[in-house]
Image (tube, rainbow, N blue to C red; front, side, top):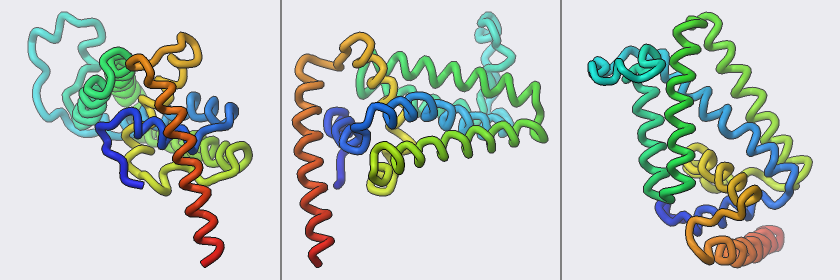
Length: 201
């Protein structure tokens, strides 16, 4: 099912069709951002691409604001999320930038010999938890098998939207949540029909 990466409503509905169980949703809320952080931390071990502008030295933690490939990664995510939704996207973008500063701080203090172990543990624990959530509670394969870009690009924003919607009834625009629920229902119907056709063939 091809869905434009700039169509937030359809992307979120696609995601929602794979995340109906509340326990599985909570698992993703807890473990999606650590996966993002681990990738950003791995990229933080690269050398600076550009020197930090002198004006940036006035910011707190400026020594951890290294313009390396980790910065490139989080900048792409941050800009993309803001383009998708100004409010929730700005929150997710702030979390991306905080991850960049945090992972640079860790890499500088831990060094590579310990840092890569932290990255490995974060990845193993987080991915295991999410696969277990799908197997035990959702009773279906994760969305990444049908939409790899969503697993690595959209998931952090989606879990942020999950929290905002649950806690504050937030929606990017009036009618968004209602439209998403209708699309999820249509997606589930289509998935069941596809599964039935595969079983009959």
